[in-house]
Image (cartoon, rainbow, N blue to C red):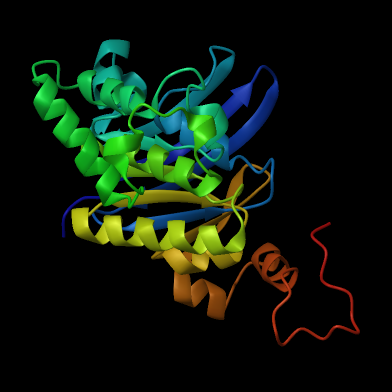
Length: 270
């Protein structure tokens, strides 16, 4: 069996004297999606930023983050910069803050490509950008390359972010709550798009969310975080069918379903 594409071991993160993540370990295989779930403040986003070494200098990080056999935490900044956007790309949860509001979207995606492919001709760059936008089903991309982020809907902006993340054909995508700001219909479209792109490009994905229903649609395996620790990991079907940890059971019980007894209060996470 091939080694995991991403292997995180005993990762701890602290900001000054305040611990945020406490000695967590997980792995992601080639072509696999790991769902990382938990409440706000559980350490999910800090974990994803640590993988890409995007945390501020005030953060203290220990442990190991091995990507394709290389420990990302010990690489030089130049070497790490070569990985970001090319081998590992990130989709952020709020496209209006992730996209530059004063730069046309075509130029923003072009910049993401040129950082790693400086010798491409202008024609080749335009072709690659349009191919990426067609791939995420953005309507009429040829006409809209010079439009600005505010001229697009929320779902269209998220598609632009996905195109920007995929432009260099990375091996691993980190999706940090990519559907949080979207309504349910658009959310379903984005999830279907991510699943299709993952299968067509054999992508590995770290999918971060507090929404168990969303994670159940995209993840092969699920890791549950609580107060900076991973309390349970299991294949998605197994975890949703038979959760083992008390916190996971309460997390699932706090979500209403069609079978929920509406005369009784939902479980709390206290």
